[in-house]
Length: 181
Ligand SMILES: C[S@@+](CC[C@H](N)C(=O)[O-])C[C@H]1O[C@@H](n2cnc3c(N)ncnc32)[C@H](O)[C@@H]1O
Image (cartoon, rainbow, N blue to C red):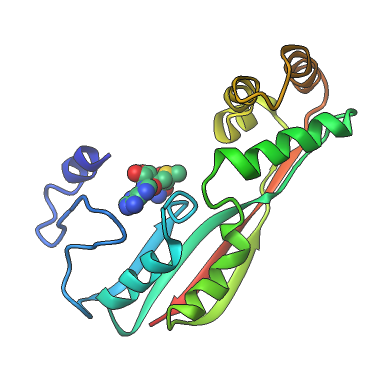
């Protein structure tokens, strides 16, 4: 992705693509006007420290826009509510490091010294199982749940068979949060 970004911006003299850990940005204090994170903080070791690092490089009044899912809101329609709960709990507890980051963003940003003027919830609804699988990784995650001992083979088959053969419904809420340094 870094190579692709460099190739796409090669003709833009003002663009400098760098690869770094969000906890340790290679930028001077107060150098940036804008920052953006898109589904990154859900994965990082220390979201609060990452936000502190972004605030360090933003100039006073600079703006950060974040977009993160809240995996605790994942809803999947399936007649077996026990399987559904096992699946959504597996996602929230074992698949994503900071699964509840969406609802935490505004508080973490405030704790990092930002003011937070705007929080926008966005809930995509998936009614096509193939689209949902591409974005949510339903089958891959189910296989991993079996490996982790959260689902038996039979439960995984029952779970996936129904999802792939009927009208499908899943939804998860993302939060877009605007923060000002
Ligand atoms: C779900 S992807 C989102 C990628 C991109 N924002 C997009 O819109 O396609 C999560 C990204 O977080 C990056 N990431 C995870 N931990 C990171 C860290 N400590 N510092 C910087 N990036 C990190 C991964 O490399 C990955 O590219």
